Length: 158
Image (cartoon, rainbow, N blue to C red; front, side, top):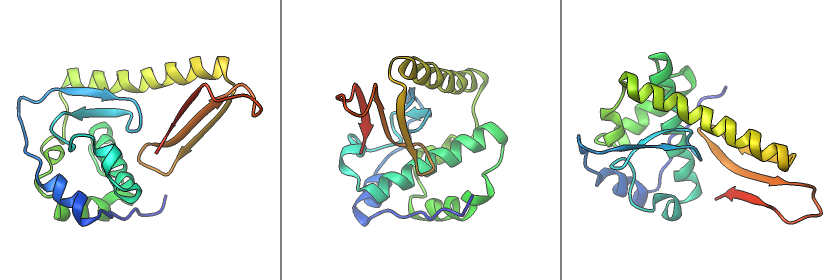
């Protein structure tokens, strides 16, 4: 895989720099677009509706790099420069304070992957014409149709 570049507009960088780490923050499973754990203090409110597409891609890559770190203990090679640049741009991002998981959190992370697999399995049984676009770092676009002549039952994209 090619190296990834961290690119965020000044407005989004400012929004992420304004975030404050909360040690009491709860996490949730984020099946789409991250397929990972997300704590409530890690993203600005409604970030996905307000960030531009390039910024969203960088945030998805940031989540993907951190998820890989949780699973393997290392940042993948193709994310090393990206990770360094992200830490320079948003050094106090609360997610940088959560670089390891306890057993319960790891089990939840595994559960997130299982839930996504179960959901995709159920969807493809009923709607076999599935298109998934992943530009790295998580799901970018997803549609499921019975056939191309029918209206979409499920659609997720930005």
